[in-house]
Image (cartoon, rainbow, N blue to C red; front, side, top):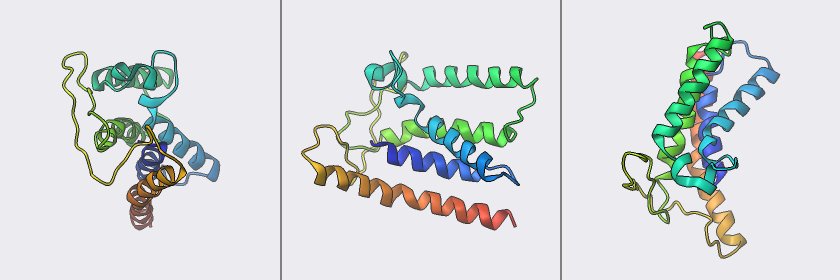
Length: 169
């Protein structure tokens, strides 16, 4: 999967969790944080990401890491989450966890061993029109993959904007 699907999903979830009255700068930082969270398992950190796919794409490892980050934020903020409240924390967690579901949709993958270290079973929920860039034969394939992801995940952002505008009146 490319970053497009993960990023658009993160943006859509971020829009739904945007605190009322946010400035342009705060909105930008908020959405950037949700994009970052949606890409957590793929970040290029030594021993993480695609260099250690089994660990970085483990649901249990990510839940432990997420719990640690939430505890540190809560402790640092004196147990008051000032980043937009618990809806932002829950939404950020959803953006992070969405990564696993989205990665199972791609047909070239053998699946995702998200239950490691308790199981090495691979979960695959392939959708036939989703393709990866691995072994990409050229620009036409790459642009096609990007176009499919934009067409499939772009409407999530539009739907989130519509819901946000409708309920924020």
